[in-house]
Image (tube, rainbow, N blue to C red):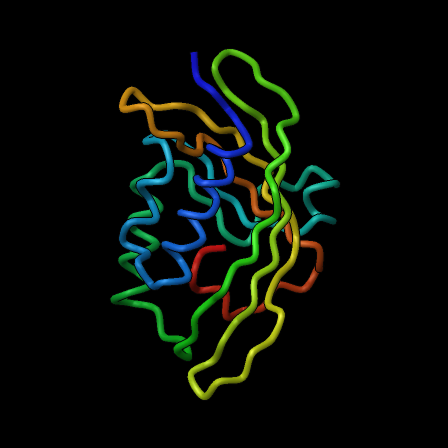
Length: 157
């Protein structure tokens, strides 16, 4: 039976944020199950049941395509993120899957050095333990507090 301790969940979130913040996004899809759901949405739309979001991917392959587009196709001003992730709170565990809520704050650092709060919100996750013993996201909803999501959302939250 999987252990969903705050330490293990915190380590998962820290590794996830580190991967993105250190521009190692090619490794980002590995944090997810093959069949998964990753959505970036606003709190307002989420509360209204509008689940499509600004970013929507329902397989690891779609996440890998997003990384390929980020590296090879998208045109955007170079920038990077720094995540500040709060403590994960386990909402419940059922059928080997933990429902977890974790607050986040993301600052964006532009090439010339300007730094601004880019997004704040909460992750609503379903976390499972893989056969290899590693925790992975079966679902990660990044629910942003603001209804305004910058069009420069190229890098995953």
